[in-house]
Image (cartoon, rainbow, N blue to C red; front, side, top):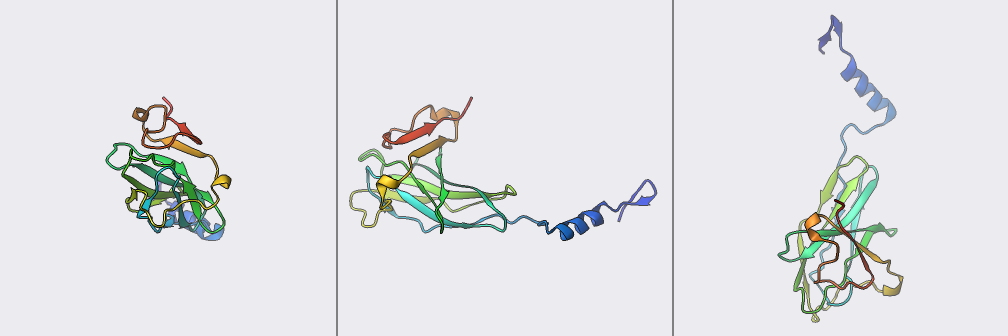
Length: 172
């Protein structure tokens, strides 16, 4: 204990007592993110990716960051909780415009702790045997893609299908 002005400072002991009494977490743990990567997808159809995300508190945000392989900046789509896992749709890769999509899944909890997966490569080609395509494409929500850098401009990269996709540029 330390002395402050001749008295024993009780702040650390008081903080610990309040933490225990109120059941507040003393140390926030980052979310756990488990994702089975998809090795490939087909052109002209939006890939549908899911992850199991758990936390000792609340998951505040879950996102898929993606880019055509070799590009400088990632974009992201938000994932929604579907009862068992968090899922999101990427915009459809255009045939002949992109051979590989690099992506990762990231989650942030209510204590601002974050966790992400490794970066995965998803090949784009008509020969993909089990593409991660949403079975009920008509029920899929509109895809909203967010830029992560002002240099990405005001539209989705040309490597992806523009129809049914909204692009949110970084505000100046």
